[in-house]
Image (cartoon, rainbow, N blue to C red; front, side, top):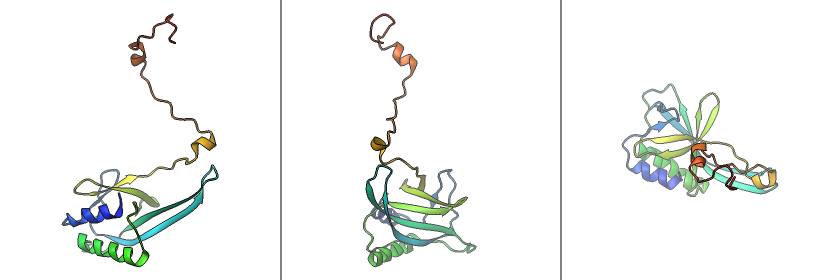
Amino acid sequence: MKLEEVKSALAQLQTIAFQLPNGELVPNHFHVTEVGKITKHFIDCGGTVRNEEVVNFQLWNADDYDHRLHPEKLVHIIELSQNTLGIGDLEVEVEYQGQTIEKFALEFDGKNFLLTSKETDCLARDKCGVPAEKPKVKISELQNSGCVPGSGCC
């Protein structure tokens, strides 16, 4: 989800809720302690130099149980960050404290912001010799394909 999409979603809401991948909601007294731009300059395992930029929100639970961040306040924080840090319409990732600091992608279901799992990947599969993923085929589908023993199709 990109930053402008987040701002548009916030404009429709009375309250903000973030939902974890397991379905639980982040406690409603969370704080957004950071809105920033993260730049990652790296070389992948195939030798290609890459640059990635994302907008980062950090969510934090405090002992301040009376606190509730309202959508218009978060929009203000985002716009201040955009103007001060020169943040464009980048993908948003969210940091949240689990066993350690966890990073999530962000989606919106019309009511809640969904923290979705992120995964690592090889960016240079062709140079690393990582085999392409083979399609999974059901044996029952092969039996109905007209390929029979002795026909020469196998």
